Length: 163
Image 1: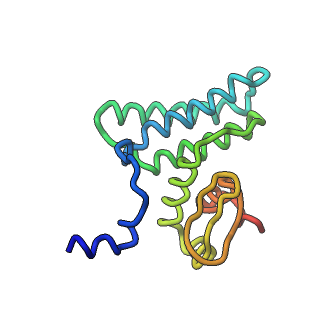
Image 2 (image 1 turned 120 degrees about the vertical axis):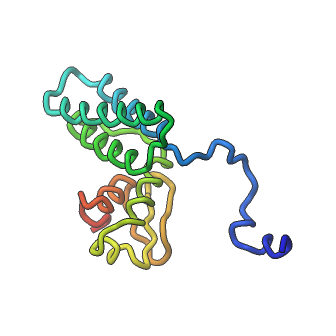
Image 3 (image 1 turned 90 degrees about the vertical axis):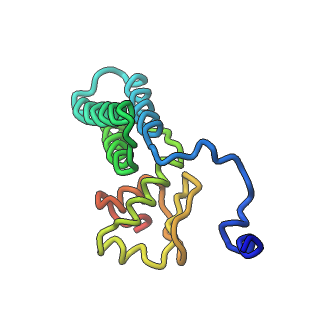
């Protein structure tokens, strides 16, 4: 049986340290919240329209931190909520966010796996390619867009990327 395993597709990946891999997304939630705070701090003063979006990001991040402190896992759907709120805040602040591609890729994968029928119909037999984040999901004809365009489309909050 051990000889058979070496011919399986997953067993032929290059070996690397995966000790930091976790299903707890608390660190990534904090990372997104910190990116929003950095953008807010660089701003040219208070933006009244951004305050509610910033408050939403802070509330979601605090809730996730409390879950993590209580020994409970922070799930990818919580990361999704923080990411979408963070993009709303960055729009209100008029400044883009610098985010790790792992964050946007994980959220895109989660959204694609649970997408509603109209969205699944669009992404079926397609490869979603994030032109700015270096990740690809799926197989088939490429559907290229920024990570934000892809994630907001999958969340039902934006148009089909590249359309």
